[in-house]
Length: 170
Image 1: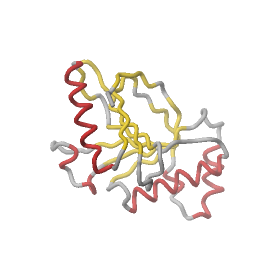
Image 2: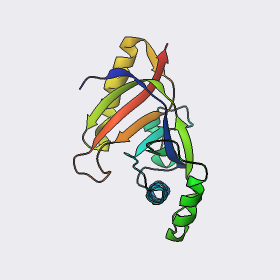
Image 3: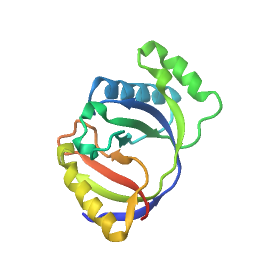
Image 4: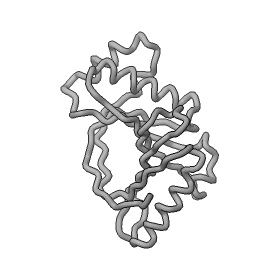
């Protein structure tokens, strides 16, 4: 597939921020908290999204995965009413999920280079290389964390992930 330059509108999301490898205890706990709270809110949400970055001078894929930082997001259909998140957290508290970590945020990215990656996460680097070449050819540079939209369940044997990179002119 060919990358494209798109404009992503602002969206209201449930958010949990963390540190650690994808699929690790911290990451899985954050997902559980998001889904537990959104189920108590009763509205549509999703699909799951992740913003990824490292606080290191090395290229991100050279940094050990346990040092990766992330925001997990569940987009909402609209802005929750006042007190709705607090009521949902309180109702979800008996689940044992870390519901107090869930926040409501507005995600704003604007211009992004986007590419559909079909295949295992271990091969995403190939799609990211295609995106980097496109950005260089278009005179674009990164303008925020790497963004992934998980179009299939994370354990799907044939995953499909929408890759996004916020950008600006060089």
